[in-house]
Image (tube, rainbow, N blue to C red; front, side, top):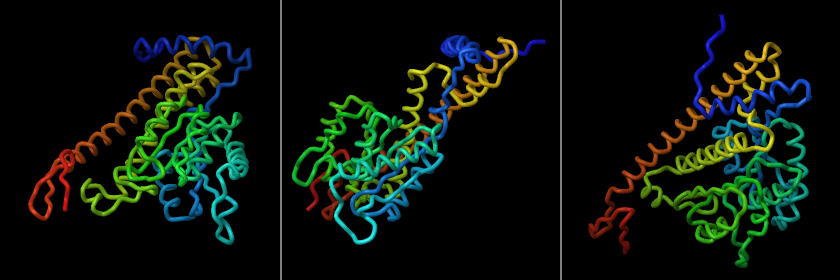
Amino acid sequence: MASKRPRSTESDEQVVQQCAPMIRGAESSSVKFNNYNHNPPVVVFAHGAGAPSTSEWMTRWRTLLANALNPVEVVTFDYPYISGRRKAAPDAEKLVGFHLEFVRKVAAKYPEHPLILIGKSLGSRVSCMVAAENDIGALAVVCLGYPLKAKNGAIRDETLMKLTAPIMFVQGSNDNFCPLKLLEVVRQKLKSLNDLHVIEHGDHSFQIAKKNLELTGMTHEEAEQRAAESIAMFVSRIKNEKVITGPTNTCELEVDAIQFCQESKSVEEEECQNVETGILMSRKKFRKKSEMILKKRHKSERILKLKLSQRIYDKNGRGSTIEKAIALD
């Protein structure tokens, strides 16, 4: 007796119909299915100008990224100038060769895992330069405190304009190296998909003054955790978009589905049933995870909005809310 096939939406059925001919012809045409987008990513995390990869900041963010992205590994390294006698950081361009070679070694170690380049300040700028190389193929670049504005006032946007890989900026609203209004102008010109998460009252290293923490009702740890969650949502969206609109084929929806494609050697109907089941399960799993993340974020936003709407008072008893602030003496 034939087993019942799971019910599908019209869009899911269309995906299965597109997949089925490719799957049936895979064995004869020697097509190798690519699991790339469905495997956990590998992250190469570059430090900033003034501290090595073992600094407290880098160690803390390495943990945040590992928990948020669930990667196969978060790999850190030190630029040569920072070891031994302390020296000033060289121009970013002089670090590209070393950074690029390191990234290639990591990519060779994890060839089946999507590559994400993340950097702190100087490391984010060099990461963008590395991502611009044709043979890297980074899934995304994440800039933690991108130094858009140099000390001499020059705007460092030339590399950003060349990027085709999706890029996310995490910036403190009080970061003098990256005024948000200036960043918004630059983002409008980028040809790559891009996103921004702002840490309110954060400086270049995301530090928040105590008085501002009290105003927002958030701890510093909570502010950084929220930023890490935003990065995870950005990466999830990128992976999903690449799966649906990617150049290879529409069968690249989940590792389970592709494994079914490769392993099934029985009749065609049973083959398609396995593929369909794998695809539907993967899509439901992704939707459920995304909904959970969004619900958690919306709850945090509601709590924060409630706290920000409560009045605060100055020494003369004048009241204010975050939406209608008063000038304190």
